Structure formats: C-alpha cells, structure tokens
Length: 100
Image (cartoon, rainbow, N blue to C red; front, top):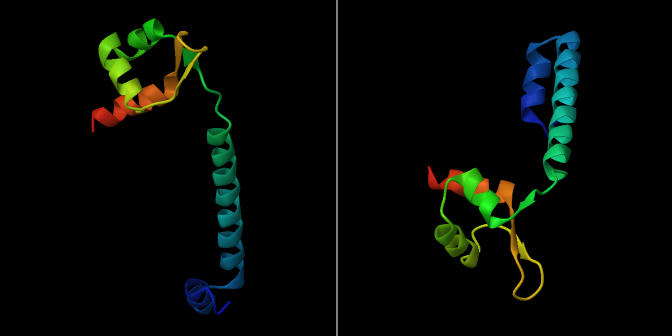
C-alpha cells in the first residue's frame, strides 16, 4: 500500500472493520459512476427539423442556421440540397452555454 499514502495513513489511525466498510463504499460509488457513464454514453440522439428546433429553443431560424454554419452543434443533411435535421440535445446544450 505504499503507493497510496492516504490509505497508509488510514490504516494507522483506523481499525480493519472501518477500512473494509470504507472500501465497500468506494466500490459501490465506483459501480454507480460506471453505470452513469454508460447511461450518458448511450443516450440516443433526437433529430428534429428546424421548426421543432425553433419551438424547443425559442431562437429564430436565422440565428440557428448561423450557429449551424459555424459548427456550434451537430446536424445532418438529407442529401445535397436536402433538409437539415438537428441534434436537439446538442443544440440545447449549446443554448445553455450562452446563458453562462
């Protein structure tokens, strides 16, 4: 345990039962953190047209298209000259960043 100075200090000041409880809590927290990381990574993308994007964000078409062209959020186009679809969550994240 010499590579973990905090653990060395705890072993000198606390009994083995306490250390085991602490270890179990750390394992439990780590499992929860891994589950949350998987949940965040597996979020599905909600693709929406510009009209729905305007309703969801309160921003106008011109400003949203300007930000799209600047690459501020994810979008996709259905073929050359086709309609654009926008990643709703990514646009909302970007809009929240404007408020900070």
